[in-house]
Image (cartoon, rainbow, N blue to C red; front, side, top):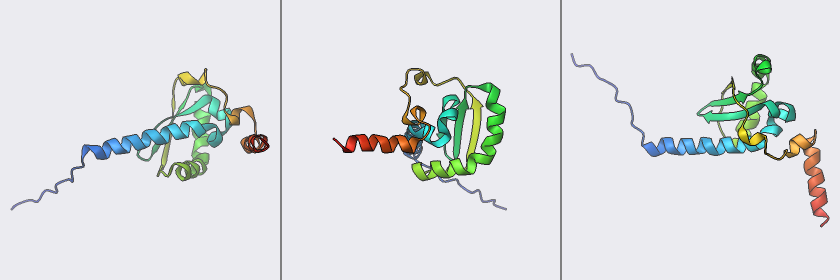
Length: 134
């Protein structure tokens, strides 16, 4: 009796390179907008580490709040996931928060609009009103 083996479809390497490049671009866009997604308080202790397929990996460099952050992430993930997916046109479904070192550029990076002001929308409106009078 002859058994039929199902042959898996082979994908070209460029398929994975394209996917990795897309994930890298999305990660950079997410890093730039991170304070707007999570707020200035959480953006000081967390940062997006990677995006792989449907997983968003977030690093937290304050281990004293890691357990509480993981617990609250379960409640807030659906809202954050919807925001990230709509902005990046991704299909993220899972989140993981891991201990990490602070990002090196955080110490020398200028504060973002969201960190300077507690209300990012107000900051954007003031910016445009200043520049529209010129």
